[in-house]
Image 1 (cartoon, helix red, strand yellow):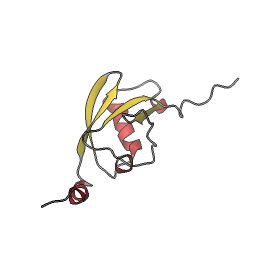
Image 2: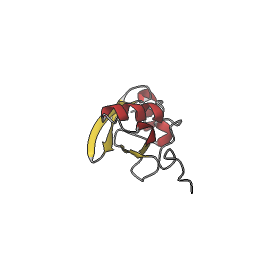
Image 3: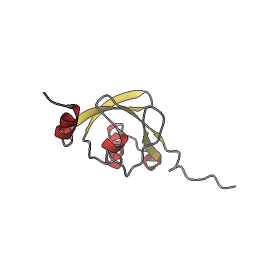
Image 4: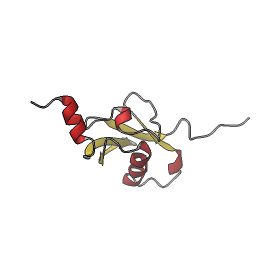
Length: 98
């Protein structure tokens, strides 16, 4: 009988699909557990053909937390049931100087 830990280890390098939503449109993109969020973000931007200010976008989880570009899919507990949101970053937008 296979345990969940064994399944997670076996699947670590194998791609699995996640949902990504941008402006109400959902698409699916394969990711791997050890993949950096920055790589997923770059592909999501291409997937939705974002051309205006793509450097201002980030990925967010279902709780509304912005994902750090330097972390991995596994570090963010992203699974094939996860849905991420592509939207403007709270940090990358810069400051509004007075």
